[in-house]
Amino acid sequence: MTRGVFLHREDSVYNDQPEKQYQFPSQYLSRASQFIGDWIIYYEPRRGPTAKGYYAIARVAEVVPDPTAKGMYLALIERGTYLPFEHPVPFSGPQGPVERGVLNDAGRISGRAQAAVRPISITDFNRIIDLGFNDEAPLLPRTGPALGAPPFGGVLRDEQVPLVMDVERERVEIYTSRPMRDRIFRRIVLDAYDCRCAITGLKFINGGGRAEVQAAHIKPVEHHGPDIVSNGIALSGTAHWMFDRGLISLSDELDVLVSRQVNDPDSVWGFINKGRKAAAPATAAHRPHPAYLAWHREHCFKQ
Image 1 (cartoon, rainbow, N blue to C red):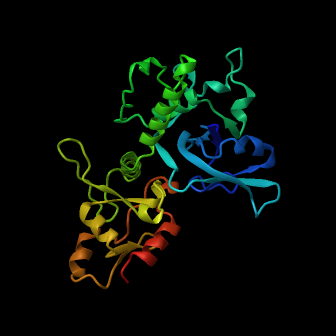
Image 2 (cartoon, rainbow, N blue to C red):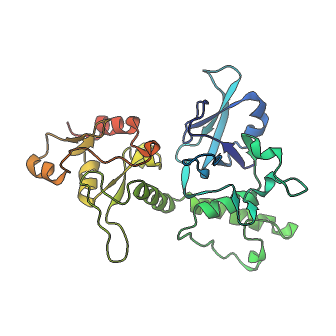
Image 3 (cartoon, rainbow, N blue to C red):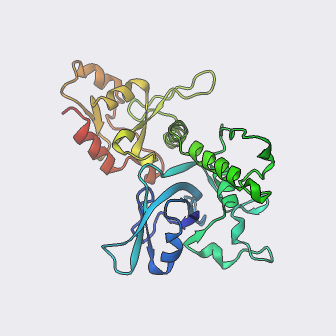
């Protein structure tokens, strides 16, 4: 198996849904097929104010012909593996490109940097995800004297390969564990909503600098809801409790809906902001997706 990079633009003409699938032409088929069962990093060139750089990881489940477009293929993403970075990683840092594999023998950026689908070394992969997940990142467990190995999963001697692979597996497991995913989801959702409850409009920060507001999944994880901003909303503890129990919901236009089963609707409406409309993130792509809102109304909201 081989790790890779998928180039994706938010305004792409391809039928991409980064948390579900990545579309590409046949010229990349043999290369993309190497990534089946392994991880890729999504990369968006930084050419505008909203471009992200390296911004998420996901695991490729399979590669199949696109039934809707002749000559095109889909890399299908394993459910629940897509994970945005807490901090998008720029292409270049103080020491040059963070993806060193795009450099030629002369140390200059080669044409490989333009390839929409390309392999990436374990060393470059780890360097990028360590930068993307660099807040309160857990340390890898000590596994004995062979921790003299390079910090990004390189190999010092042939006999250390099994240990390095074990450490590499542990690294990925840490970054994709439920506690880590929950922490990252909270961070990216609260950043999108400026730590303000979308329902009440209130923003409380405690003495330790921690926001009172919580990150709620619109379509829950147990029902295969992804850990992405458009499936999240920032809510106070009370609003989160009511949202999860279907006592309140949102229309596609973000109008607040209150269940007829609420025993004190006047108090609930008094708790909601005066406009009776949930606040939307400043970035349009972070707005709650209609598909997830529809799921909540159909499967959770008590009409």
